[in-house]
Length: 328
Image (cartoon, rainbow, N blue to C red; front, side, top):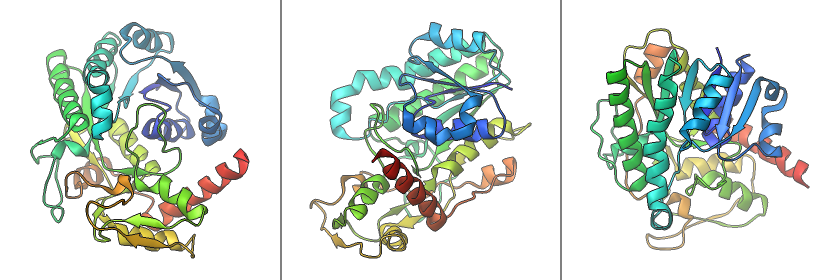
């Protein structure tokens, strides 16, 4: 079946596209940004299975044409602006609402005319808001978003669910944990990155890392595993639920990440900076949250992650060094 992936050249989207294409699926990757050389290299031989369409999800006509021309049968809607820093909220408030909320409605409107087998709406674990970091969060936990990005993802998710109900459209929601891995960068829609890209640059340059309390953590999940989880929700013939957490379910602390980094950069130095200091902004947690509970995904979709922190980081470092050597 042909699959449309919106946000198909973004960080999560390109991983979804590669997982699908490597499995022999025809993919239409729709994104406001076209693919650059790094993205094409990342896809490798699988690029031949991918058709790129440069269009904004707010352009309902363009989305509809992509669905019709390429005879799309399934949709993964991953396009979003991740305005999760105050600077991005101030600069792009209306645009973020327009893309994350109305863009979602537009994609659903376009998809409905083509009777897709299933639509997977990619949401975010940030919709749960602040919770006890020691307690895992099932999909039944209440939504309590804090900030513009989580609020728009929560609104988009609720509207998508209601739209699917009244139009009898097969839809599932995938709530993502914090991904890390190749091609995490800001191409105009991702204001807040995980600490991994900055740490790789600093470690490669033998610069000291500034970090907060080493016990701070989240359930960072390798991006390929996140993509595989989304595809599992798309492909499972009969879903028992309408929402699934996409996560490895394992909380990883800053201290554990540093330990894993030192396996590749033995000379890595770090300094703990007190609260309010100049620690890496990617590690400044605005709200604490427990790890997403992936039990539904594991039991209902038969999914298991391939990577843990160490193997995921090793794969990321290999890709990083290859990309750096190619660039130079």
